[in-house]
Length: 207
Image (cartoon, rainbow, N blue to C red; front, side, top):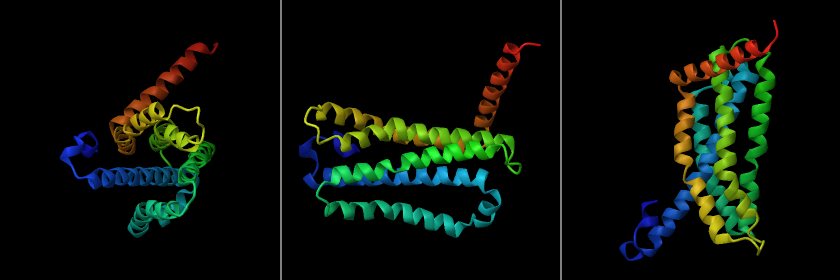
C-alpha cells in the first residue's frame, strides 16, 4: 500500500499495478479465512466429537493452501469473463449466507452442547458475531458497488473512495478478531457483559 501514496515519478508503472492486484488477492484470501474461522467455530459447537477427531495439523495446512490458491482460481476465471465485476461481486457475496447460517446454527446448538465450557461458548458466539460484522461493514459495501457499476446514476468516484476506506480497516478488524480467538482478557469482558445483563434482568423482574 506504500506504492499508492508515493508520487508517480518515484516508482515504476508496473509496481503500483502489482501492488494493487496483490492487495486484492490478499483481501479475497482474508474473506476465505473468515469463512474457515466461522465454520471451525460452528463445528466446535454443533459437532464437537467429529471436530475433535478431525482436527489435525495436516488438515489445517491443507485448508490454508486451498484458501490461498482459491483467489488465483477466481482471477483465472475472471480473465475470460465478459463482465468480471459482476461475477466477482456475486462470488464474494456467497460468504454472507454462510456467516448467517453458522451463527444461527451455533446459537441453536448451544443449548444442547454440554462438552464446551461456558467461557468457550461466549468466545465462539462473540467471534461469529464479529466475523459477520467485519464482513458486513467493511467488505459488503465494496461488493455491492461492484454489482451496481452498471448504474450510470451512481457517483462512482465517491463510492469507490468510500468503499476503499472501509476495506482498508480490515487489518485492524483482523486484530480484534485475533483478540477474540485468544483466551484471557476478552473472557472477563464477555463474562462481565453477561453478568450485567443478568443483573438488569433480575432488577426488572418482579419478586
